[in-house]
Image (cartoon, rainbow, N blue to C red; front, side):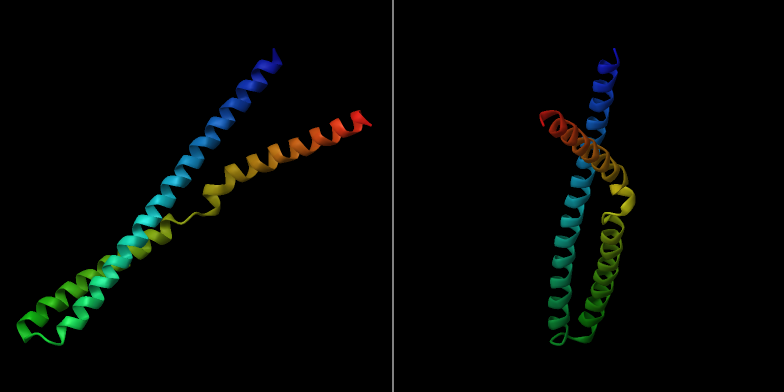
Length: 117
């Protein structure tokens, strides 16, 4: 009877690990998307900066406003990327599961080796 509960505990922990991995993959995709968006905004910022020297004063004011908006958006993306990067708290549970099952594997390996000798 305890074998069944051990297997169900193991299965529940495995499902939890899979869910945590899916969350990590989702965060990774968000970071990649943010990096691409940041690159596009930086390119737009450079383009507008280059074109601003050739334009009249009314157009320059409009471009300055666009540059400010792009700068604000870049700052927002930077802070978003920093907050989405993986932290210790997101790795804590999988780390301890790896330690637990890795240790269990080593112990089983030592027992099997001693039994074989």
